[in-house]
Length: 250
Image (cartoon, rainbow, N blue to C red):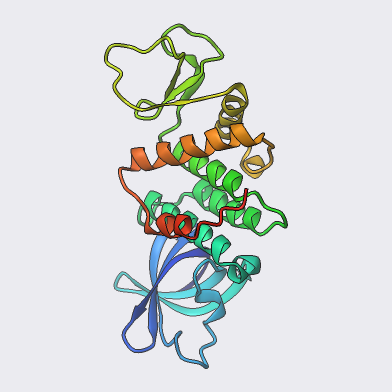
């Protein structure tokens, strides 16, 4: 039976002589694996819609639990990302995070929307990469069950604490460390805290619509990356490559 679905290609793997295995985050079924037959041949009509980071409408045939692509019509290719190695590497990191966070065949429209909006944000002229990256990381953590406690210091209740505990995911004042606290605490200025509260609660379409001063942005960037990687208990080779470029547009 043939069906249609919209999805974002998170990963592509060469398979046999001319095929690819695609990891696709779809709207209806969550993360699925699709086989694109002959897509690596020069004449393949599937090429455009089956490339990494393509958001496409797939017509697929499913048999015995395996999904084969019959047609792929690209809806959005995020072309500016393909013309800049730094942007492409950061976008690939977003895709790898989305792949890790999305379970097999379990719809997660919020994660798909976040990833698509992050890719679109990277395509904007003059984009502040550090800001998009931090917003994506913190929001992704929230969507995946790691939403931090941001109402105030967990010890004294102050609404303006100045430390964030990475392992615990909560706020403290610098003078309120508890005896059992042994984890990393990073500084949080009022601007950074306001941004964190915004990212945890704002509407999906407004995740990347905020402004932050340079010092607060650095704090947010350090917190968001460290918090996500710590709770996922892993690193990402795409992030390592992005950092190795050493460009990092401020």
